[in-house]
Amino acid sequence: MTIDELDARLLTALREQPRVGLLEISRRLGVARGTVQARLAKLEARGVVTGYGPEVDPSAMGYPISAFMLIELTQGRLAEAVERLASAPEVLEADAVSGPQDLICRVVARDTEHLQEVVNDLLATPAIRRCTSYIVLSRQVPPRTGPLVTSAGGMA
Image (cartoon, rainbow, N blue to C red):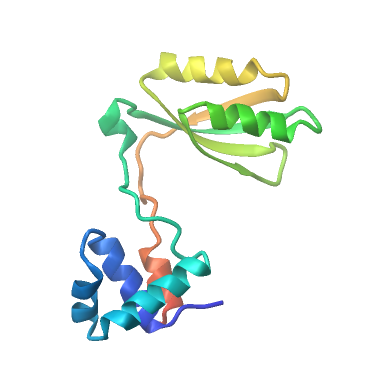
């Protein structure tokens, strides 16, 4: 399924100013409030819009170290490893990947010693055989969906 130009404009408006009301967005887009509400409901139902929470910067909360961790699992113990990863608040996301490792995770830490503690805690479960960490030196392109929305909506 794709989105059209109005969907793209709606999503762009919400990303730029998430706290603005639907009436104001409808005014800015030049469409009826009911149209905005119906479009947004459809985007939610299709899973395009997945949330409205505030974006949080871990470094501003005292977690300035960001790292990617490649994890090799003990065969057949994915569920156990995922349970352990989900219980660690420093693990922000984890994805199964192809290749020699099984998972890639984005983690944060207060400092490098804390990162070592996170690694050690994860390795304490028999489901995880090996962790390889790559500390992020600087972010060059932040997480984003705006350009994709623009392209998918035919606005580019």
